[in-house]
Image 1: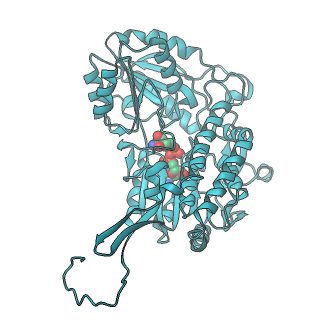
Image 2: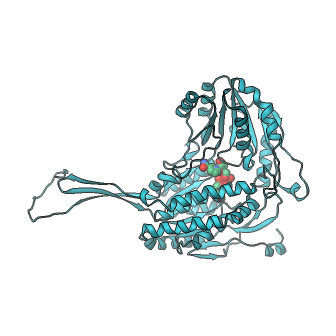
Image 3: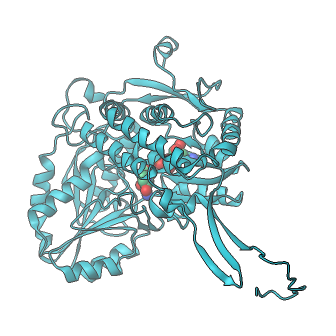
Length: 505
Ligand code: NAD
């Protein structure tokens, strides 16, 4: 960006100790509308001192926040959910401008996060300990689920509303304080949500935000005052974060990359299945961690490719804020080049290009955008680059199997285990699938089975590191430390004498 333009573009502040402050860094990057390349804002790469100040403010706020009554904490999130609802349209507009997904899908992104906020307003009963009377004569044992202290969250670009809301509401509602590091590619809607959180009554220091990339993430992983790190993003970065933060003694949960397969059995409801596949493969331009990126057609379903291609052809590529758009741009020029490069490799490695979405026809300023239209390959096999890599674009790979057993074996042999689905009208086949498949989220005639917050998000194998998933019951255990109290209250003056054994009497 030229120096004169730089002044016209707003800067994104840090949030430290309840104040939105301008970073003193000399390193900034542009936040760009991926449909038009318009520069929307500049985001700072925070300095080490700023990261330290955010952590210190969270550490100081923890002293009082951890003792704030459960009901008072819950009421902040009751107010917060109302504010998010009231601001849904403007949140979605910001999200679409910086991320590219359609306005309706952007509202879905906010809504799936809002559901976690509603749960956070209501989690008192999940943070209760257990109690047993008379574990020995006159001795009782009970547990406390106490907050850990300062927790950190590192989030990806593809759900800039939902994923930050997976993290800080549950951490804060359970009595912790938080330092959030949003994606530097689209931090604007995250900051709008943070402003609303303060408006809802989150006190100074309880929620802090720093921006940046690798250096800031490493500083969060290393800092001794941070007790737990939640990460969502790619497998490469998540694996690094898991090892680095674990090495400094933190609790860590990393939800990572995917290659989600759907099995289509020949008895599936054809029209519903093809609609579901097209929506789940090309929605959000294929940039969902739960997007269907491989369809395994079994038996006679192998003949359904032309009808799937015909459906994909009808999807409209364009700006997310334009009426009728089905598929928006991918996040950056680099992402578009990567997706196009993988399409070329798919052709070179022998897959059949049934539908080519490269360089879709667009008018005016959109010609500058990062667009790739729906793309379908058939004849895809393990070993091909388009099968082995997470493409994270609107590209569906179609593979074939003779039997359902063969299809299950293929999915279980893939390193990723984030999401999967089966399309069938057979209860017995669905039951076998749910039992034998080694994947975290399993859909039965549901293409994108993201769990609602009464449950937790999970993942198998390379898609997840750490035992406990984000939101839901599991995250209560993640964000709290169990303390076990064993108590005896003497009710007379009779001495029982010195007991040198381990047994309680
Ligand atoms: P990413 O890994 O590039 O970035 C995630 C976060 O890590 C960002 O905040 C980024 O600033 C930071 N980061 C980037 N490079 C880093 C480095 N070298 N060292 C330390 N930190 C670094 O991921 P992304 O491209 O923003 O998101 C897409 C990925 O996230 C996909 O792989 C997708 O499958 C995955 N994802 C997974 C889930 C899930 O729940 N499993 C959900 C959403 C997205």
